Amino acid sequence: MNNQVMNVGRNSQFTCRHCGAAVSAKGRIHTSCAAKRTITPPEVRARIDAAFLKNADRLGYLQSRWADESEHEDWTEYIDALMMLVPEGGKVLSTSKRPFGITFSMDGVVGAMYSFRATSNGVQWTRTK
Ligand SMILES: [Zn+2]
Image 1 (cartoon, rainbow, N blue to C red):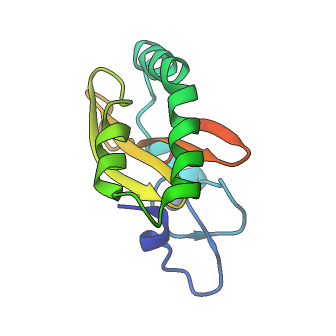
Image 2 (spheres, rainbow, N blue to C red):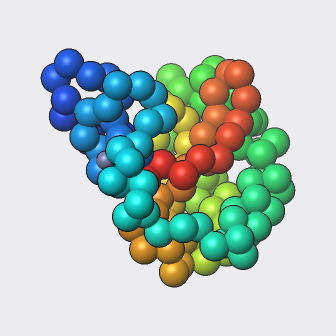
C-alpha cells in the first residue's frame, strides 16, 4: 500500500507514518500511534543499513535511468531490479515509480514498513509505517 492511496484527509496532504490519517506536517506521527509502534531492533536496522549502503549506487542509477528511459523501457524489469535490493529477511510489499523505490517489511517487526527511495536529489531509506 502506498502513502498516496492512504491519504484520505481532504484538507491535508500529509499522513501519519503509522495509521495513514491526516496530520499537519510531513513525516509526522500521532503520539498515540508512536506508542503503539514496534521498535525496529538494532539487528534489523543494521541489516537494512547494510543492504542500503551496498545498493545505494544501484538504486540511484535505476532512478536516473528510469527518469530518462521510461518511454522506452519496461517497468517490470525495474521491479525485478528493485526486488534484488531488499535486505535479507525482507519481504517486498510494493514498488513505485514516483517516488521511485521499493517498500518492504522485515521479519519479526510486526506492522512496520520500510522503503528504499531515490530522487534526482539522492537516495534514502526510511521507515514508512
Ligand atoms: Zn496515526
